[in-house]
Image 1 (cartoon, rainbow, N blue to C red):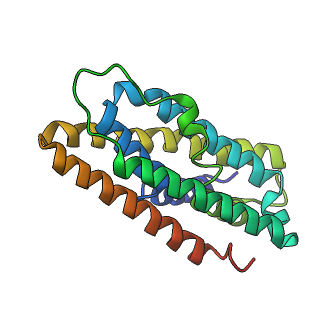
Image 2: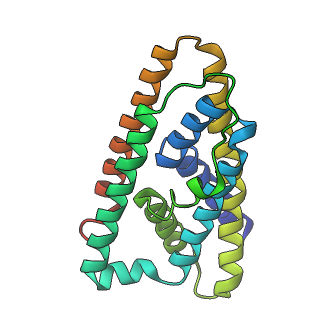
Length: 203
């Protein structure tokens, strides 16, 4: 794969993964709630879930969404239900007390991307725009997905650490509660916008 194509993939990945989305909002909330160190399993879970989306896109699930509208609609309903549930948890979770031993778990994070329309739209676009018929599909999958996984791990970690810093700077539990509610609201707005712009409703 040409180096200029790889650079374009990197730029696209940074712009998409680094922007606010359900995973980043959840990671920031986890950092604010548990701290960065205790949220590492959650970060690894979201990264693993993103890999599963990549496998699904490379295997042609995006085409199945186009061929079978009922499958697409079912996916969108499941996604909406899960994102609303996640937003509710973030909005009403109690701020960190400072003496708890709980942590954000791996399995809590693994389902975020598979049920996130933005993640599917992002990777469908990437594989559509940057794949070449003249190259081995497995080779292209390894290159594209490796870029997204590496940058995803870095950028998601930054969002989570940002939440940790936010918790240290804001001492008022009430203020932290309203920040969580703001993150939850942003999550819902971003997903709705991503679905509308991606064409998943009209594939």
